[in-house]
Length: 297
Image (cartoon, rainbow, N blue to C red; front, side, top):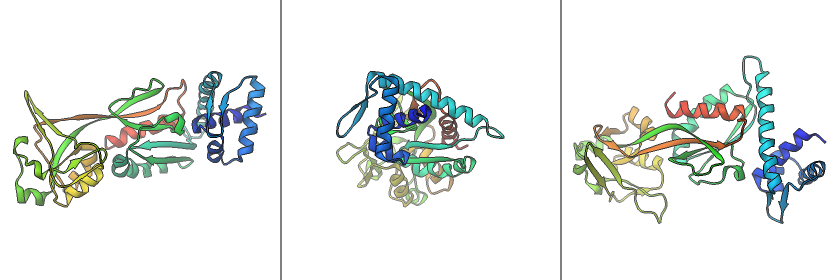
């Protein structure tokens, strides 16, 4: 039995939560994966997985072995990458989760350069605002906002964002530019709601001891910052969005930033990945890429 290959199969089964899903990810027949796991359990003399008709889950011994396998495979990847001429050669598959607006506006376009630098690495990106279990989903790196409460994950801050109030030049020509948050008409404010059932997110401004909160009451609201920016660029009203998302619209003059002397609500962007002893080179490289992409580098 090829034990290193068996470790790779076992890791994929744990992360997929299913023998058939693991087989699909490995491009193997279901029977091959099943046989591999049985042979591995026989070799080790322990039960690694609990099985039912729909799902598999690691036993306590399986969880310990899974963490050790991840570390061993990461060390192997590091050794192989270091043998490449001119530095590390990244290969394999990297599965990534990115918030939808961030993926459309920042990460997606920047990935073209990352892919060109690492032609042997396949990056599979899922754009989603859901916060799911990384290991169960087989995700190598994800971007989360503000906090991560799972102790089994490493979270690295890659960008500290602030909200910015902005509007299109033609809208400001018609309605004027406010010199104070209190001068903003809530009926001209485009709203953001996380879901159809969620309330609209308030806009918060602070300058010294003075604090102002605005409840948007415009007749348009979205669950997408990308949609908000595109709609505001058509002159539909004011928007209150994260600076990193608005950057290209502001740079191109489609929108104008307002009230620069006021502080707004902050949000931290975090790169998150499973907390194993050895981090694969492709994960380290991608976190470095995310940091540069978020900061405009």
